[in-house]
Length: 60
Image 1 (cartoon, rainbow, N blue to C red):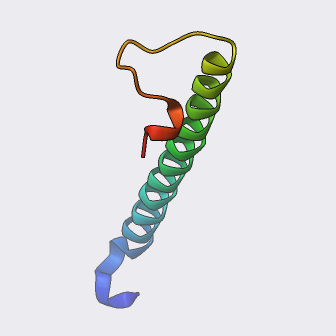
Image 2: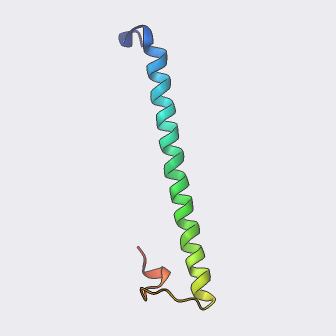
Image 3: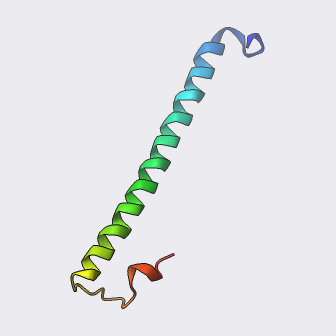
């Protein structure tokens, strides 16, 4: 790490923190996407229809 100079610790720590935040956001979005699809299926099963006419199963 000495090739990065006297600020090596700060640089490496910054990159690690940014990578962690991005990973957390990606996981959060993936989990929310699955929850929303499940909620759409519940609503359609209860008789609520979508204006677009597509079902939750048609959404890629």
